[in-house]
Length: 334
Ligand SMILES: Cc1ncc(COP(=O)(O)O)c(C=O)c1O
Image (cartoon, rainbow, N blue to C red; front, side):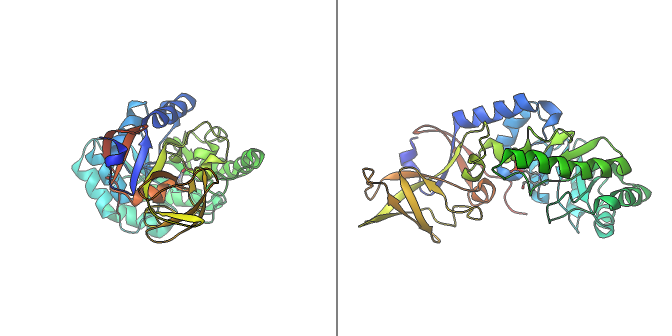
């Protein structure tokens, strides 16, 4: 099949770029140094390639991702790096699969209670290292670890995601802010114990030397927001669209904000300037000398990979214009 035969909008992944990204990361962070985050691709076929590259443990953001990874035989060490107040599906998953291990992030008494009530056995203490999201104050981590152990949970260590740092364009800032964040996490780990200090993302994969494992995800497919950071990863992901209307001064393709994660801004179209996106459309201004016609196919580069992928049922693995394979985006939903 050729990409010209695909219905649009369609998610495309350039096979050579994906291979490059996976190999580059595996060389930098071999084996257990990387716990790939599957939220960035939501695809067990892609996770299998990461496992083939030597990475045994995975990071998940939803219960559904943990279940899907287990069903695909990739659940021997999954971490749900997120808080849940109903952990019964996780407990059931562990109870019915001897070879599945789920480690759940907890950051409060209610989340510890939920882990116990749900039948979860393993937890990490989630520590706030500067991102105003989940995570306990660092000085509270030891108390929460003691509480967890008193209730029979196995505390494997700490996690603390420096999400306020990973996307900053300035490497010097990323270095100093990661050092500050990890000082807090290492201190908390001293109070908690356990073998894991889990942290990091694509923007700090080679900076965060304090963590025992890095939770990077975006590196596999990449997006234009991370593309500004001068990382050694290539933009493998695009959305194929069809030009459906051309007017004086602008053109419109069938790839709108229902096919693109827009929270990091407009997508990019080569040889054109994106004007705006609406539900089903991207309106763009072709560069002089690069006119488009109705029916032309264009590749739209998303600014944020994770929510973009979550809109699509499958990703088409392509070799330039040939569709080599189609992988289901089978970890969608909650
Ligand atoms: C808990 C957690 N860890 C790690 C990451 C790193 O992901 P990325 O590689 O996209 O920076 C994320 C992304 O949002 C995250 O939420």
